Length: 391
Image (cartoon, rainbow, N blue to C red; front, side, top):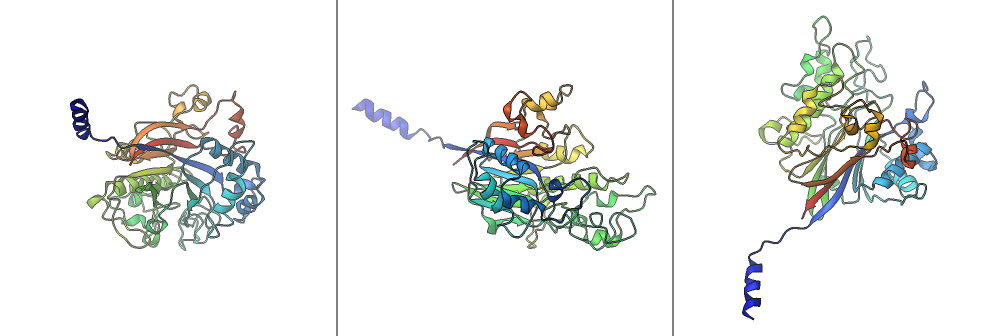
């Protein structure tokens, strides 16, 4: 009896270890925008994706769905998924007609929660942004390149409840309002400002949008920070896209730093300030690498080095290594064009990253058919990380 009592006394003093829930979080640039479903050179109307979503029979979309079914993320951001305000035509059609249907025997997957919102692509600015003498150039004079509003949009899918009422969007945040931003360094070859005073007064920072979407995982709010910065190319010596990409990524670095660093930030409801909570994950095709490519390395580099970000676990794949055998970084590439561009970056306090990867099969694998070329699915690969979130 004395021994049992002594054991109980010892156990009372032992702190209980909180159980962790492993949550798989992913990002995937799915190339599901209207021009993807047309012959090269044909101008899209913006309805092509939605027509293919209704049919349930488009092979590229079926392959995208199979990849997601194989990896089975609990939370996934889809980049380049055209935006529509009619969810029945867009995200719900994808869920119901593709993800909820077994693809070649792969187990179907359901996402009861989703989030989507407008983006800046294809939205007319009303000013001459590309220096061609007009202010109505379709694509060139829009807030970001797009042939119709909503092209290259974003969708967030989740198995856990999304607190949509608490979501913050930054679609309309003006680039000029970022302190020490690179807007004023965008110059013509003669040294003049590329953007006119009229352009600077209305030009938005985000090429699509920046979202802070809270998801409730067993009572813990995890802030999904989603974006898709512009590629740092397709411009000229003024490097307007490269500098915009840098500042779009810098936005998240400032946002998660919180405090005075983020005082300048305001959302689309005019709520000011950054994220003063430490449970977050940065998701998206950031179109930048700290080691390769044409972008500003310090934009993505500063985010990866931020003291709150867990960037040590770099997702890799055998297929990426095979695709670029002469490149020591090949295994970490997330795009067919040989660069790490897509990121799942959880905060250090969110939990340990127990596993991660890039869905990139080798040519010997049967699933290679899903990524064998641009037409099969996308020029990007799905990137995932398992985060052990403690209760």
